Image (cartoon, rainbow, N blue to C red):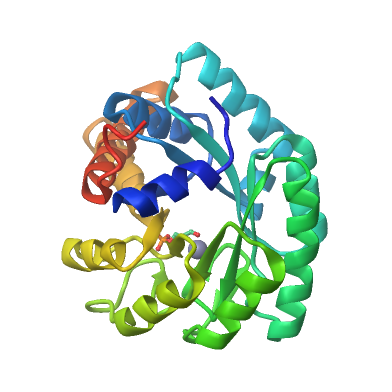
Length: 283
Ligand code: G3H
Ligand code: ZN
């Protein structure tokens, strides 16, 4: 069923595992993630960036597509449709009005007072409709759709303020993670993560899940990370599989002949992440 992230993340924090947010781009992407989650009996968060929503014609189409799949695929595990890196109150409102069950308001590129102000407005609107809210402090490195930036660590006092003053359900403190592949090993601020966990007491989110080694994933989970976002890795695996088919069969033209192997590659990747995050058999 379609739910907000609140219960799944509170359970994950309590049970010392993380729920994956896997970003979607189209029908097959969504099928693959839902099939993997159902098979693994795992709760799941479908991440939708503003760019991906535009690609799929809009928030309304995304919601109706997901609802259709939940029905036709007989999905029983908890599923959240979550706006990823929402850029404004208006975008969050638009997603919520279309039926999203969760939103991220990313005010991290604004001064903290503005970030808190926009986050507060989103929380008021969202919570009245049972929708969960994620906020970000500090900045994640790399690029994702329209969001570009260098790494800036989250400030502990700003984290406390945004949690206390807005009532968000979950917080993404940027601590050295990067969108897209890492150049070398990631260098995550675990000491800061632990401090932020202790002073905020709410589930934390780790952005830039692609390319983080298992021991770092485990450490992050042990320090209060309850949601891990993965996007690029599925893109890489999908494209690799499609490319292999097209290279092996240059005469292929039936789209299903190359999209299905791409879909299978995403499903296998997501199953691996679910097991790594420990959310299997938690639905
Ligand atoms: O918000 C989405 C994620 O932070 C994705 O990061 O593309 O590096 O896996 P990634
Ligand atoms: Zn992100």
